[in-house]
Image 1: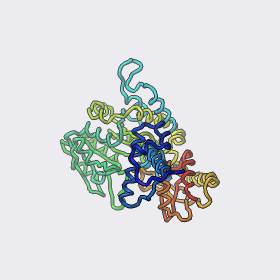
Image 2 (image 1 turned 90 degrees about the vertical axis):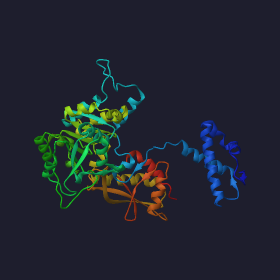
Image 3 (image 1 turned 120 degrees about the vertical axis):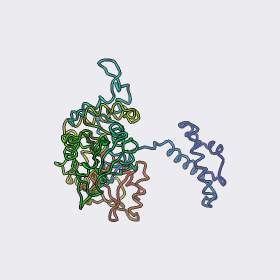
Length: 461
């Protein structure tokens, strides 16, 4: 028989409950103690607010402690189901890694590696050598170096090229991306002196030409990754800027953002110029991300002029910005896939999700509903509706990708209630609400997500 507790017990009393004995055998005592204290503190708050019942059931109290303990020991960073349709979702970890990259991470993580060891000479080696040759092979760059993200790549490049000197940039390219990363702020941190030219919507070549002075160290072009200015606009192309730089003897740098290594226009993805095309213009330095359109781990890639990159290698700042062995392992494995375009599109999740055709997504939706239906209550209604997905990650903000979604409805449940309940599941499920419907986009749902989705849908009676 359950015992009724009329007052909130002390910690020692609760720890003596027989129902908690197994917890003390399987978990460290301080951890169990923290769970007990948290639950009792919450009960005291309820008591002070007058919401505590007259009698607390001992078994129920132990149940609350078990749940609290589960939350304490559960990892803070964990997997979830992305049904939003945003492929490169910054809040959800951006690009998924290809299986070869995951395997390479595990191998390097579990064992010692030749991170900075030249196996031919037996002397200390260069960690960037593991990816530099691949990057040069795939892009045609003379040299390459990799840091921990693209903001770091921009910071290192500006610091190495333009400390105390002018950097000319269009006002229309002084962007801010997620996390309040702003080009002007990075410029100040680097020690470069920003010199703005043109206006927000129109900048011409003559604006750069007039601004060049003996103190000018760099001409900078920044890709407006996460927004687009339309209408009465004008901008200077990278080709024009490179010619201007050559005439004046000033290097040109382009921060191109996403860093696509493939021409995806054949798959209907337009507006993203491949890295190789930028380099063909003769631009001296390019910076881009490794975890956006490239589909690898978080990294900032610097490509281009051998002399300039050699100089960047000697920058003391590089030590603070360098990538670790796990990032190198993942990036190298991802880059190797790009040697065969078909393999890259098939195995790199970001590319696979971006290039999948709507007909395949509709067939996938039908298949998933057939597999889910027998495993959930009949009160839930699942139907297929057309819609659009987004690239995400600040890439191609105006591009809509036709898709198909599963609409989830249940008697007595609003879309907002479904959304909240799904986010509270053991494996959270994230979808989107549109036109009064709760939707799950098949473009970003993975095969491994199916059990978690079934569990989420099982909340309906």
